[in-house]
Length: 79
Image 1 (cartoon, rainbow, N blue to C red):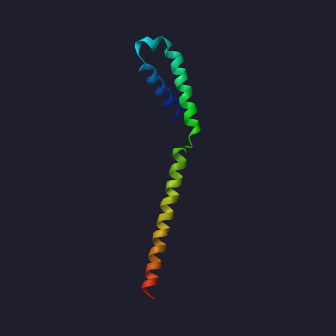
Image 2: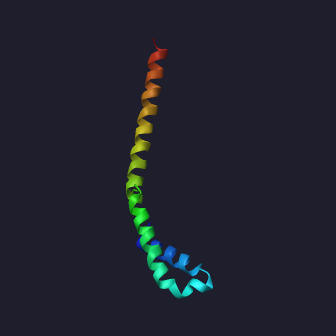
Image 3: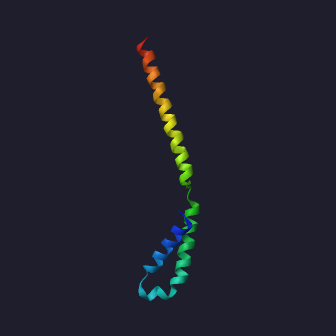
């Protein structure tokens, strides 16, 4: 999550408060922001770039595995 998306989520949470609590909106929005950041830092997340790199590695590995399986099958047929 980007800093901007955390800001937007905190703002939406603050805006969803009942009218009686709106006077404390800024304080609550700041608290929401802090809780969201804290919670997200505790998660073991990777960036989109890291995910895409690993996805490509996995695709190449699958391709090699399929090639090896095909070779093994061919060798077993020729026994």
